[in-house]
Length: 501
Ligand code: SF4
Ligand code: SF4
Image 1 (cartoon, helix red, strand yellow):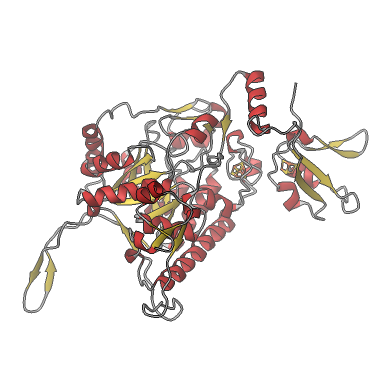
Image 2 (image 1 turned 60 degrees about the horizontal axis):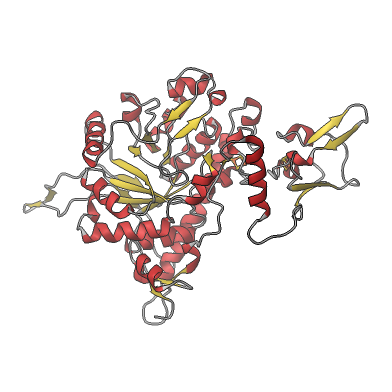
């Protein structure tokens, strides 16, 4: 039956010089050269609003507009609902989508405001006084034992390995396969330059990334792709992935057609074979099993690397996090339900899990109550959009954050939500050699590093306005947050007071 197009491709005939650049740039086959008619025809039904033709048209003749609803309006049977049902009636399959949750749930970050100093508690000018963003991730001792002599003081306590971050923002795990090598390289170079880290994702580590491995956290997921001694040793830290915010409770699937020669070598699987990550780790059915894996990985790396455990934010996240820290992990990564993904069933992405803000607050509170907050760091991810979100996440209790979609937008992503199709017009979520060439790692690294630079400076401005001279002083400092338009129960869960009180 087909569907009416969602977008309208508007071309200004006076500006168009018929250079045919749009026919090359559009990977979705919208602009097509008609040899007989000697003109470009437009197949609007294929347009996904990736904006590639808009940005690359030399005369800026193209504009993409959202079409007015093609269906008679209805508050319950919205156009999206009707499109989805028709599509499933046509195909009989699960709706696959990319990027984060699109349902209009409350975004708690938008209902939290940050305090500022006035009159009696002076603010700090970050241009004139130092403000510390350095963050250490990993377990900290319960107390420090010192050995004092006349001339010296020595630390007797043996410290466990920690990651040193110059800014509390890292690039989230996005595997080689789900994104291109050029995108991974861009983020690795930026992480190194800015003194922070990126996640390898679950697809192993391409040899080209080894020079940046001291700024890469290597992931061990249920598929165990490319997990070998060298991989574990070369990374700065290890992350066991139990769950993912965009698809809690289900596994992953990289279709065989995306498993190219290079990806097959990195993932250590045959070319063209489906890379399936099972929903559970088949050797983890209890906290004791998890503990065994944590210590096996620590053993394999001679106790020199911190081991983190990533879980999706779900209802009983605080108890799970306590179990993880007691099992010996050096930190817990909480991935909220607005986290991005390269591909997930729409029904899972949009309806499972909980918001990252409440997960951070619940976990921080519980770890404090159990008096084990120092034994592991909290890393928050999923839908962090700005330096304000970073500051609010840290005030709620996180030590650091991961950014995924924001990092991709810095590289050029326009959030067209087509990552699962492998035709990314910006060379990011694709393995097509022609499309990959569109992303130059040096340029990507410059942009990603600039984003971190800008957010870090804004974080210093926020800290200065709060009269704090270090990011440490903001961590879990929920008293510097106030809620607006939230119910008493929501405020209680977040551990913040209402504005005005
Ligand atoms: S390049 Fe992107 S925005 Fe332009 S027509 Fe093709 S799909 Fe639409
Ligand atoms: S990564 Fe590429 S395909 Fe995915 S949303 Fe961004 S622009 Fe679209």
